[in-house]
Structures are given as structure tokens and as C-alpha cells.
Image (cartoon, rainbow, N blue to C red; front, side, top):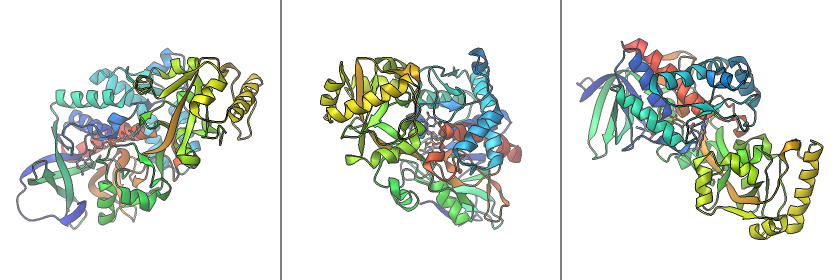
Length: 465
Ligand SMILES: Cc1cc2nc3c(=O)[nH]c(=O)nc-3n(C[C@H](O)[C@H](O)[C@H](O)COP(=O)(O)OP(=O)(O)OC[C@H]3O[C@@H](n4cnc5c(N)ncnc54)[C@H](O)[C@@H]3O)c2cc1C
């Protein structure tokens, strides 16, 4: 599993100019870009049908300066976007890569729309923490399943071959670090050696590998992993064996609002629109508006590792644009009552504590004041009955550490030189979130999957045409 071997001196079973490991957002954007640039990519995917963490996501991609923003009067620029990314990442993200993704994201959204018919629009009824302006672009259902299905259709229509049920285990390496092929195992157990002139690693991070999570992110070792189980850290392990640089292996995207025991993502719109969280004692415990990623650990620190997200009918209307939220309503995860007392009873929390928190928050909203944790409440966000609550826990969504790359997605060695024909994008590469969960700006996951995927595809195509 996940090894490297010297390139053997015998013919391969099959050959492709450009191999891509993984058919998530990164792999498919890479394949589309490479094909357009005149290369013939072959995408290898361990699952029967490509899904990846991409399919589990809300499919929201942040982008600056798009025509969708302009149509809604939203003024934005790649520079403002880059500044938001770095502010969040405490300036720990690689500047070149941040420039590449912040400039490339607008083009990516318009490329996928114009060339492949993905119908993006920009969410304009709430903003995500850390973004100076509204720049989250999503497809009509606001699901990653729609995103991955549309990318797969685009790839198939473009004549790109995706080999399903095939897991890459070993990279075959020349003495100079050039990758000249891979060994893969088919679903029926058959081994295959496939030669290549260039290789793109698009097989995401190590969230699905409990040993690596324990080693690099011990604080989340016992948390629910909500990403794709097939993302077992192959890129990082191959990189290690090759002598590649990796960075920020303790960084991750968490989420502090996964309905439990239903395991359904509850949109952070619930908080950003004026909702709040209390623990099982009915007490608030932090400034939940900071961000959903770092909130995962905050929630897990509470008794029994749970919290309640509390909101109202107005907020539910905003959250209902997400299929996940509608699913949570259908499955009975959302509690609804007409008074604070009845809601507290249904949540089995102290009425006195919940009512005290509620009164304080509503008073703060009236004067747009800050609470004891520093959270600023907006005057237009008063809660009115019927009230809602949902029991949530914190979860690990995906890891943000990975292989260090340059702005063309070429994987770097420890001495800062690049491997001759090895590229990484998406969760396989280090993200732009710095070294902590708090550095994750909403959308950094699909931003680096799609934009870096496209850049990797273009750059790799130049090597093999
Ligand atoms: C619940 C949830 C919600 C999220 N919401 C958002 C959001 O709205 N916006 C956002 O920006 N990010 C979001 N994210 C993060 C986002 O989903 C990921 O950052 C992104 O999908 C990563 O894309 P990827 O292509 O790198 O990986 P993936 O989509 O996971 O694709 C990797 C593929 O590689 C395959 N693979 C792995 N190893 C091998 C191997 N050895 N051989 C062959 N195939 C292999 C896997 O089967 C998989 O199909 C969310 C994540 C989760 C879990």
C-alpha cells in the first residue's frame, strides 16, 4: 500500500501520456483542462462511480470578480479575496499559491459555466465568516453531488477515460525522481502497471486514515470523520517516500454543526443569520460566528461532545436553500416550538440558562453590541417564533496539510527544487489555510481542488503534448 519502487525495465500493461489519480473535483478539473490543452489524460479512480469528498460537500466555491457577482452589484477583486485568505491563515499560506487561486477562481467559475454548462450563481442572502463580500458560488441544488455529477458528465462528453474501481498503490520512480508509471489494483484483484509521462495526484488528504489523523491531528482522532473514507493519505505517504516536502499536516477543515445522531450537515447560515449555540446545560461557550471549522473542536469540548444550534423561522427559510437542511427537516432532526421555555424543554436543557442567554443576545442585537466572547450581533437579526433547535456535534471534514507545490502545482522536493513530472492539487497538496483549523476560510477546500486542479492539468499537458 502507498509505496514507491524503482521503475522496472519491462514493458507496461498500458500507457497514457498523463495519469491522474482520483476523480474528485481536483482530478476532473485537471482532466478537463489537460484535454483542452491537447493532452490525453487517463483518470484512475478507486470507486465504482467517482464521488469523493466533493460529492459530500455543499459544492460551494468562492470566487472574486465574477459576472455573477457583478450582476448582483457585488464589488470584489482577487486582491481582496487573497487578503481574506491570508488574514484567516495568519499569513501562513504560500503567497504564490494564494495569488494563483484568488486570480484563477473567477475564471474557473466562468469556464465551467460557459464551456461545460454548470449553472453557478452567487449566494447573496448570507455571508460566510471571513469573506469581506459575498463570493460563494453554488449550483442550483447547493450540493457537491450535483457538482461531481456535472464534472463527470463534462469529462465523459469530452472523451476523457475514467478507469473505475482501480486503486493506485505504487509509484514507479526513475533515479532522477521522474515518475514513469504506477502499479494499480483493479476491483477484481488484478494488478496492472500503467506507464505515464506525467502524473497528477488528486487523491485528497488523510482524513480517512485513522493512524495519520491520530499522528497529525490528535485532537480530532475521536471525532466523527465526515469526508470520503477512500481518502487514506496516499499522496502524503508517496511524498514521504519520495523525499517531497509536506506542510501544515495538523491543519484541517472541521465543522461544528453536524446534526446528531442523523449525521446531516446543518448550514452555517443558521449561525451567521443570528442563531447561536448552547451546550447541554443551555449555556453558550464561545463566539460561534468566528467560523465553522474551529467550532468543531469547541463543540467537542462540551459535555458529551454536543451542542444545540438555536434559530428561528426566518433563518430556516435561508437555510432551506440547502438540500441537506431540507433533509434534516424531513428526518425530524429539527425541533420546533413557539416559546423559549417549550424549546428548552424539548432540548432537555435548563430553561433558566437558555432564557438568560436568549435575553442577553436579543438585548445585544437591539444595540448591535458585543457579547462576553466578542461576538457582534446585528440589529436586524432578532429571533421570532416559531423557534427551532438542532442537536449537533463537531466533525472532521477534510485535512488541509499536504504536499508542498509551486504555483503550477509541481511537487517540491525538500531542497525546494521540483520533481520533473509530478503534480498535486486539491486535498493532496497543502491548502491555503495555514497550520490550524481556524485558518480555514470557507470554501478553501473546493477552491484549491478546482482551481489548482485546472492549473495542474494545464501545466502537466505542456509536458506531454
Ligand atoms: C461534508 C463536507 C462538506 C464540504 N463542503 C464544502 C464546500 O461547500 N465548499 C468547499 O470548498 N469545500 C467543502 N468541503 C471540502 C471539499 O469537499 C474538499 O476539499 C474537496 O472535495 C476535495 O476535492 P479533491 O478532488 O481533492 O478530493 P475528493 O473529492 O475526495 O476526490 C479524491 C478522489 O480520489 C480517489 N482516491 C483516493 N485515493 C486513491 C487511490 N490510491 N487510487 C485511486 N483513487 C483514489 C477517491 O476515491 C476520491 O474519489 C466539504 C467537505 C465535506 C466532507
